[in-house]
Image (cartoon, rainbow, N blue to C red; front, side, top):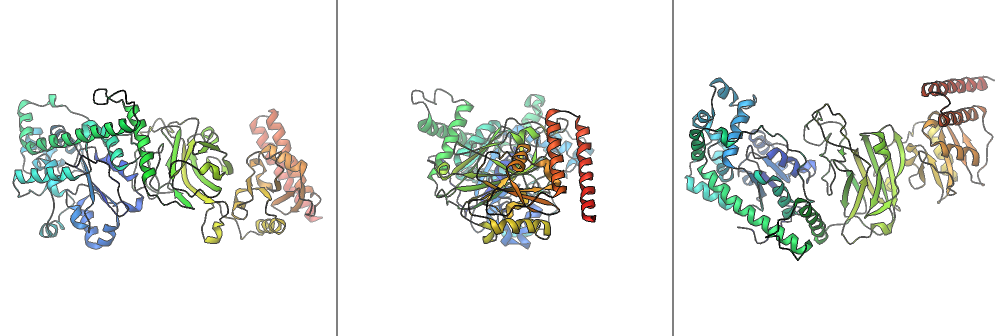
Length: 623
């Protein structure tokens, strides 16, 4: 058995295959493993018909995937140039057999469902009928021992969409199949047990050096039926049908127990209290989790990770960190519970905890700009509570643009914050709370914010010159009003100038940009304020007061007023219509802050002021 060294570092050129045996918590494991790979690295099919079609029509594409998972037995290695790293999960054979029978009886899509319901089969009849008994006849042993020669592959290419293992009887002896299954189990770096599911997730994390995985959702879980519900005759028949599986399961349990003990001892030696011995003092889950976090950090620190200057991270990618729900939207590859379907913008919700982390191997030679796009929030106060720390040091997040629950934020991460004993940089995002969006739906996940994309790049790099689109809002370059403002400011812009403007101007002034959604009073480094006259209500009110009272207009057109405190830029007189709309907005801010009128009255007043502004503007143009 391979238990002396149970850590396994999956190399970039290696493939991982989860050999899924039916009714062994496979759906939960699919999601667990999928999170460790990018969507384009995951073989999209879990069933023989599609797998064989892909092997026949595009073998090169099939071999490009790094993660395979499905009911393929041990046949997958024969389609690849190099055998994949295999893992599997086993289950108590009697419980698995009962679960499989119950699943077929209640699932109309299963090809055997009509037969079972039409003949009103009980479990004993199911275990004896020639068209159904293969579903429970030593299925775990046959799955692991099962492989295909070229002749068999040709034969099953034309099979209908039904499990090969459910239709093919292996012609090898029982002893041969069991010996093959045992030897393969010994070679697998990881074999989990359904009956010790959380322990299995911890062991899986330890073996591959992943952040410790906790069971937060059990998917596709069937109602349970216990052995005590079975008649003695049915129980005897199940034992007879699972003779090989029972021996294989005991073999796997021995391996699991030995690996788990080795893991706990290794963690205790590295991080535990030497005054106690984990052999005699069982380690509780919280302590083990904390040790595994340290182990994850140490394993990453030992790895030869390539550091990157520029990181563009869509949240459909594999996550290195914790505190995130499953990827959703386009490219997720899944139709998720609770009505969440594939399609649309890829994203991840934070949660279920209030802290979420990301670990990146980032260059640390200069200050770094972080840009972040959030496309939804479970509540507006959760969005407003978002904070960031980098390697445990707080970093200010600035809102570039906010439209309802959508927000674009940025931060400048000082070089000193990037230094760490780890060989990666940890970003920690924190919110005040998480919540269930729709308590009436089946989706009962506590969530916070939906992250779409994050980007990190050195402050001195001009990404637009490298052809990189690192902005989320397109500058309207075909609109003369916008272009004239940008060109006017550019003509007078100095290196150290700072500009407060609508988010679209970030594309033109990425180095100098400041958001106008946040207060910027008493900021002497601010030299320009670009005000969109139709969107003054989104400007921070203190910022608007400060800008109007301390700066002078230097440019005005039908859409914008540009204010500046630069002495070398020629000032202009206020145009009457611009002054009117500005003063109207300031008055609305005052009324709102004093609660002079109900909200509906204030909205009406604002609409009236806009109508008045348009009429004054038309009157002036006519004269």
